[in-house]
Length: 121
Length: 271
Image (cartoon, rainbow over all chains, first blue to last red; front, side, top):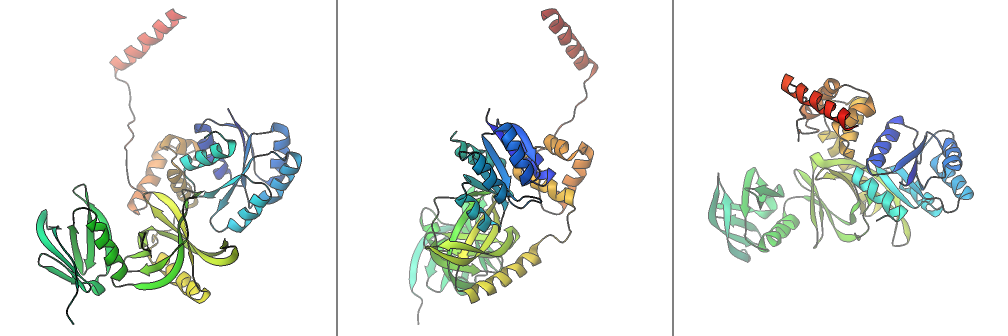
């Protein structure tokens, strides 16, 4: 079962992603509500994939992505963003994010994108 | 000057059932049986499903619904879509850019028109005639995208099609873009639901859109079935959702209890 770390500052969005990914056969190894926690949990769990919100308090998703990539250049991170934040997504892709999903999202599309990034399709 | 006839064919007109009629399309009008409509006066147009077949609905005051056999129907639809009464703007568009939250990769920028009719916004090109009814418009915002290697300001239009959120991009001169943004924002404001939703109602709508089932919604939000039913009723009353399935809650009859009890006994025996 591929291990996933969910990063989002809203509990609701974390629960939604947990529900979708768990139903899709993924093991949720942790949830973080900001970039700082995400980096710590990444070191701890070494997940196969991270879903990363962009706008978060303390440390945003872009900075967290940079730090995770410096710890593990092979890290697979999918950015999770709202319509209108595509410029930030572009920056994230340049920094090594492997894909992105735009809120609101549908479960099958999320699973499809995550599997694509993990090379499971 | 007389009208130039473009096509004549047999068609069927819907009047409480399908009635055979001759269709004549000219450069100025369309006549189906006894119904003659000047194309420039058509207020809107739509492909609709009637009796399990696809038909064309023309709005001009009332509705005229007709169908034409074979490929000719799409050709007539395209001709009408390009020539009906509308506010039309020459644009480049990319539609859809995303579907269900994920980027669509096999779509290219097209040169065409953004057309606004009485009931809908259209993306028109020789290959595509996409109609988005005002009810299905979600949001419109400016954003910067790389188009043809250059950073350009585009309009991002979020809309709904068959239960999925799509975004489409529009590129045109900046003054037109400003005007379109303002125009579309006014339309969205006019057609959005009058009643504001609470945070939990928005969360429930989001969960439904994501495909989460009722039991999981209760668990995610920590609410009871009765509470969820009330929220569902409100979303349905506001026209924001529709009922697709009614969940059954059961209580066992004494006979059912006996069956379960018996099954447990035999499981004990099996251990």
